[in-house]
Length: 440
RNA sequence: GCGAGGAUGGCCCAGUGGUACGGCGGCAGCCUGCUAAGCUGUUUCUCUAUGAGAGCGGGGGUUCGAAUCCCCCUCCUCGCGCCA
Image 1 (cartoon, chains in turn purple, blue):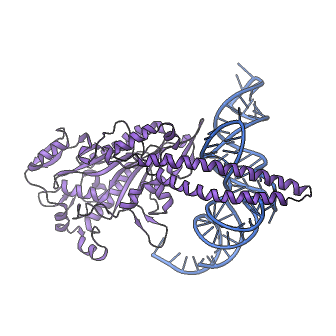
Image 2 (cartoon, rainbow, N blue to C red):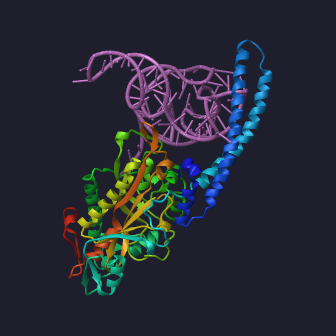
Image 3 (cartoon, protein in one colour):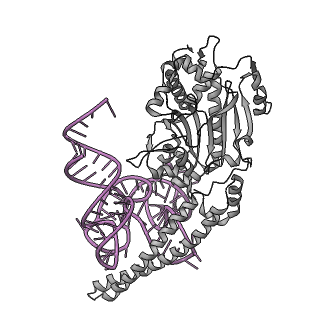
C-alpha cells in the first residue's frame, strides 16, 4: 500500500508512476473522490461522538447527585441512531477507499526503463561461459548486447524432457494420471540433486548472515493479501476449500507477514532471512507455455532471500541480494545474465526488479531462474511493519530474491552439463551434497 | 476432540458498568564532576489538528455509558485423549 499522506501532498509523482507502468489514472482519481467523502463523513461521526460522550458524562454526574437523567438519555439515544446511520456510510466508504488504494502501484525507482513488454527489459551484465549451439549464436549475442562470453558447440544438447526420460528421472504420465498436467514424480538421482541443491543453498545463505527458516506452507487470507497483490491471487494461489487457507506460492509471503503489526528496534535491522519451502502455483496465466517436463510446474522447492531493512539501506541491499544469487549461480558454473525489468512488467509492489536469467543451451535462450525485487515500504506499509526512531516509528523496507528454485535449476543443469556418454555432470560445488559426480 | 485458564499500549502488569493504574524499556529535557543515580515530560492510529475521535484478541448485542455484562469466533498456555 502506498503512503496516503504523500499521495495527497504530491499526487503528480503517483500519476507519473502509474502512467509509466501502463496503469490508468482512474484509480487515483477515484481514490481522491472517496477520500474526500470519507473524511467528510468521518468528521460528522467524530463530532457526534464528541457530543454523545459529553452528554453521557453529564448523565453520569446527574445520577451520582441523585437526579433523573431521562432527558439526557433520550437525547443520547437520538444521537446514537444518527451515529449508527453515519457509521454504516463510513464503513462502506472506508472499504471502497481501501480497495481502490490497494490498486495504486508503488513509486518507481528512477533507474527503471519506461517500456512495455519483456523484450524491453534492460540488459545489465553477463557472467560465465555459455555453451552456445551455432544456430543460437545470434540470439545469444543479441541477449547480451554482444558482451556474452561463450563456446560454440556443434550439437544442440538434448531437451531436459528427453534426458529425464532416458535416465529415468521423472515420471510425468503417472503424475498426470493422479494429479493432472504440470505435476511430476521426481526419481532417483534427480531427487538427490534436488535435496543437494536445497542443502547447498541453505549453507550458502547461512554463511552470508541469513537466518534460515522453514515457514508455514499455508496462510490465511488477511496476512497473505497484505503481503502480495490481487494479481497473485488471480494467477498463482491455490485455495483450500474448507478453511481460510491458501497454499503459499513463495516463502516471501509468510516471511514478510511474519512481522505483521510489529515495531522493531532500530538495532534489530537489517534482518536477513532465507526461507526454504515448497512453492505451489496454479500457473493460471500460462496456458500452453512450457508444457513439457518440469520447467514450469505446479510445485517446486525454493530457497528464498528476504531482507527487512531501514529505508536508507534498501538500494544497497537490492544489489547485495542480486549479487548473492549471481555468486550462487557462478559457484554452480551456470552462465547467466541480469536484466532490469521495464516499468510495464513490474508488479504493483515493485519499485524495481532484476531478473537473473540462466542460459539454457537446449532451448537456445536465457530463461528466468531468479527475481530480485525491492518493494521499498509498500509491502511493509500494508503489513504494518515499523521500526522505532527518535523521530517516531517508520516503515521498514522489504526486499526479496530467489536463491535456488529447484526445478528450474535442475533443468538448467540438465541442459548445461550433458556429457558425451549421455549423462549429466554434477557441478563441483554440489558433489559433497549429492555424493555422486554424475547422473547416468 | 474434552476440560480448565488466558489474550490490556514496545514489553510486563492492575482494572466486576462511569471513559485504561502502575512498572520496565525507548526518546527528549533538567539536575548532578564522573562508567551511576535522581527529577520532569513523552511513548499507538486517524482527522481540515493549540482541538478531537478511535483503540483493551476479532465480530455482534445490552446500556445514557462496556476492558468490565451477554452471544459467536480466533489464537495461546496447562492437563487428558488421539496421533506421523
